[in-house]
Image (cartoon, rainbow, N blue to C red; front, side, top):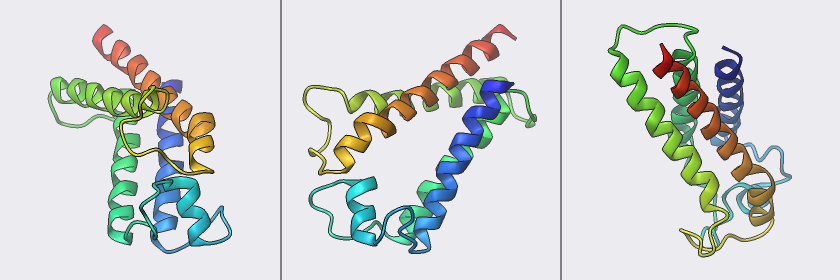
Length: 145
């Protein structure tokens, strides 16, 4: 249960940040360009993704948090167990691939700009790997049931 709540809390916090950015706030950066270089880091982007795209990302991250609570038995849904198990596998794949891709010799996408590249290596990728491992833990707990 502790893993479930921890994973969900982190995902809800990240989701809230994305909702904040969708409103146009650059927090925790000084302006939109600093935010763009810090959290997106793509060399070809000149402006932050649209509010709609950012809200969609925030919503997906929030649903991943709800999924962690469901997987941890915090609440139940009237759905078959195989849906919960399949969803956990999908989330493991998403978070581990996202996190591990940062450390591949040839990046999957365009080489990021600074400060994103450093922030990604130090914080974003390890966080994704930790979340992926949290979902692995939840998978093992669900398979043991």
